[in-house]
Length: 186
Image (cartoon, rainbow, N blue to C red; front, side, top):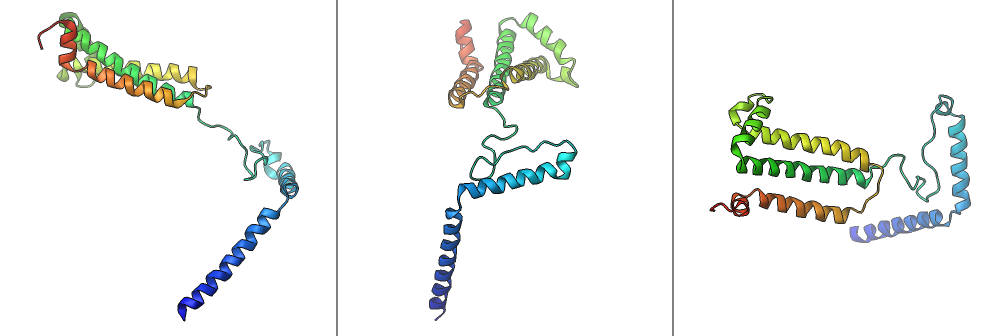
């Protein structure tokens, strides 16, 4: 008995839902545009308009929202972040290679940079290498962000470039690889 009653209720609910959908679907675009124009007029005469606020958005799309948001993040900003991370990692790799190839000069320089960090001398030249990578990363992020923030770039190729560059830099940090490149015994 309960299952029969439930099926009647659900059938009635389904009919009501179908009627509501048909009413919404039968609305004319002209009606929607008139409602939107009425809302625009209400905004123009409202307290926000008197204070000088500008209504952001339009009613051009069926959802009643603008096709383009007021400020959307651009893909150039994402590419700037990825490239700056790769450049920071490349600076770490280069500083490590320099430290391995010419420890007398490189380690003195990196110890000097380590002295700027709190307790930096306790970790030796590694702190200077990290400070170099951090400086390159943040500096390049700022510059690339300012240069690329207005551009819409395709992200898929840049994601591949980023992934391949990170893998290459990780392999180049591996001691057997750079020992082989320098011609040292592994």
